[in-house]
Image 1: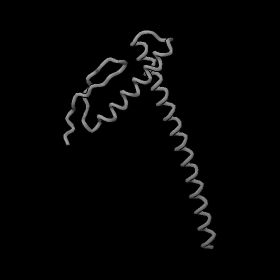
Image 2: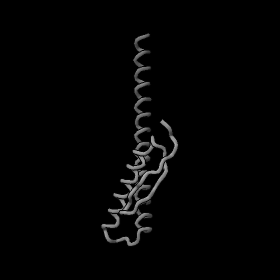
Image 3: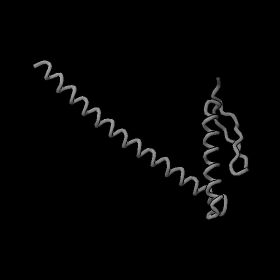
Length: 101
């Protein structure tokens, strides 16, 4: 299968965009488009933000915020896992020392 970019039709707030991407990434692109469209519709439906450009910026900020929050949570989980692994390694080491004595 070739990874030569192909045009993909993407619809956001009823406006169609042609975006080039490799065929192997088409599903991910369409999922991203759907996510952006959903966020933009949510913002538009509040009635507090007027204008497609402002809606797009607010959607981008919200999506970036969600992404950064998720990254922070993953980092906290990583730190917790490392701490637990260190504790387990220490317990194993202590147990092995007791057995060898």
